[in-house]
Length: 158
Image (cartoon, rainbow, N blue to C red; front, top):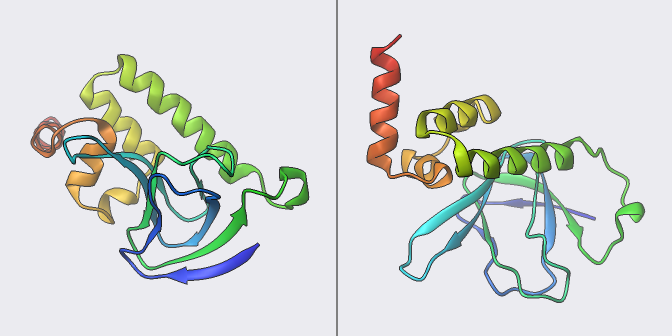
């Protein structure tokens, strides 16, 4: 395991990379995302402090996701070649990641846009202050305009 510091905008992983790594975020903020055939970004996951972020492919299979730093970040790198039992770490970040992904998939299948936004604010309360609205909209599977309308409606209904 290695500790590194990266600057905002640093791309840690590109689609197709082999032998990718798992990143534990000590400080800062990462994101994982895909880019579709039309060049549109689709944010898969945010990785704030205390979270783990990775592409889940085995070490020698090309990955699907890009991972980059949204903020200057301090990271612990865990090579995928290490077996989980060889790495001593707190499992809470991994559990948080799995729970967030499961809930997100279920919500994308059945929840309204407002429910998805409310869930995002519960899971990532500080991220809305740290990233552009277009990234939040991408994560939620909506346009920035739709997100703006939801936020406006919530303010008017308070």
